[in-house]
Length: 132
Image (cartoon, rainbow, N blue to C red):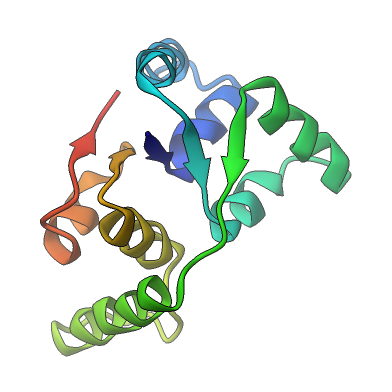
């Protein structure tokens, strides 16, 4: 089982010229190993290019991607990762979606498919990162 980050999904939605085929292939490889999940923050970010929620839901359904509700433990870990980020000089004033994704992958001990591996490695070093 694998969590997938927004950037990989947007590669598919937007047809990114550089990443489309790599992201599609990486997602297919992970699907061959088991179920694929996202958290609600990834749904929100992925939904931006769509005109209606059901269009985004249909896109995810075609890819057989399931939304997973975040656990209280993961929510707490996301907050703690944000706290560490701020202490390291981070300038954002809100918990970043990456922290929600990384925290749930960490709690569930699942791999994470992403192109944005630096932040995840920094704040969730136990999470196995898969890059397209």
